[in-house]
Amino acid sequence: MVFLTEGSLTADQKFTLGPVGFHLIVLSMQDDSREPPEEAADVSFADILKEFEAGGKRPPSGGPRRGTVVGVSGDYVLIDYGSKAEGVIPAADLLDRDGKLSVKRGDTFDVAITGRHSEGMVRLSRVAGRRPRDWDALTRAFENKEIIAGRVTATVKGGFTVDVGTRAFLPASRSGTRTPAEMEQLVGQEIRCRIIKLDIADEDVVLDRRSVMEEEARQVRQSTWEGAASRLNPGDRVTGVVTRLADFGAFVELQPGVEGLIHVSEMSWTKRVKHPSEVLKEGERVEAVVLKVDVAGSRLSLGLRQVFENPWDTIKDRYPNGKIVEGKITKLAKFGAFVEVEEGIEGLVHISDFTNQKRIQHPSEIVKPGQVVRAIVLSAEPESKRLKLGMKQLEATPADQFLEQLAVGDHVTGRVIRVERDHVTVQLAEGVEGLCRVEQAASAGPAALSGGSLAERLAAAWKGGVKPPEAYHEGEIRSFTIKAIDAAGKRIELIPS
Image 1 (cartoon, rainbow, N blue to C red):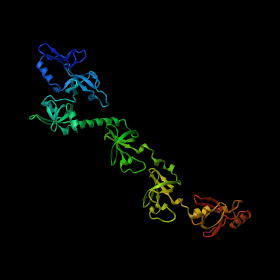
Image 2: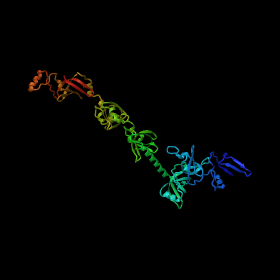
Image 3: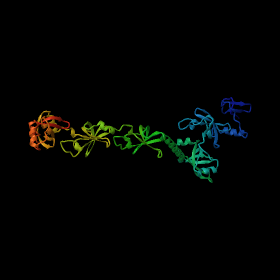
Image 4: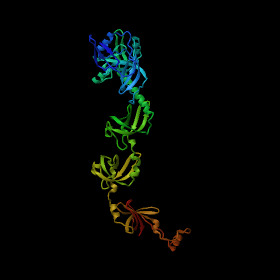
């Protein structure tokens, strides 16, 4: 049987050479101009036959070799790994973090043989680190807890066998795999690991891959975090996806490896959020504002409510004193009732401001939750986030009814209840008072005279047409004329009749 590796024949063609009956089998053909590889002088025909009869068996690793990228075609990178021997590495195994091919023609790096491609090419993998070559190197790696490279050769009970220069054992629990499918895919792969047990006498070597993966993942996250943190500043607006909810807040992933926390206290301006699920859900994309960047602690604080305007900042403009509003009773307390005047904004009607008609012990005597009521704004306090409302101020009182019957120019009678220097206060009805200025009792004329005795000054004033002010006494009944009415303020201005 004769083997040809290069030529013009088609693969799998057979020819009979003479009466002896030799068969010519073409193993593989390559259409390029390179010279056929030189065979080593000590390679015998028996060795070649043995390799052929092995068929698709995985070629031995033989330890790491130096490989050079000689071409890139589709999904594979062609590697020359010595003596003009070539193999392939899947391009997917050589991508960087951005998904771009990390190598180019002419790059060199260590490779290891991991199998044979379906089309006959040797399959390689990039060696991920230093591989010890003797027991002394293994001992140093063990004592110094160095990360070394190895190739997973097979699955065994409880784990894997790994070639790290000698045969080693990798427990499944320390392999970083979680499913049977992942374990199967690990066979033939180059891994980075650490020796956790070494017994030279028994040639017992135990490896740990999981801790190395976790350390490297932390390093990647830290590097990614530091890069992102350098670009973030308080006040920046960012977007991300809610990854998980906790009692104290929601975690939002801005990019792989960069996560921030929105605390429950930063989710709403107007209501107290007890659990983030009241506002957010996992998988939801949200916009937030950066509140604090803690580079040392790798913590990022975000705010959800800061995306929106704080409604309490403009509460005085939107709810001035005296404005009449409508709202729904949301809850009752012993001291009053809360009325929602807009989404998230509640005002309080104190128990003393419900009605003028009677004294109540609890708001439930007047209103109930869900009831829509009218109220008047008594005050708005943005600093303390309080809105005070009143309902009794909108009730029609006996004073209101009395005022509705009066008009400017009407004559009224009332009792003087208070006399002050320049005005008197007159009670016209229950809860209705009028004010009369004393100087309005004097008719037009010259100013009061000065000099002489009191009798002389009064006589002079009388002759000049100036009447002295009338004397008013508390409790006496007097007649007046209405000069002006302020119904809203329940104020009446009087002049003597």
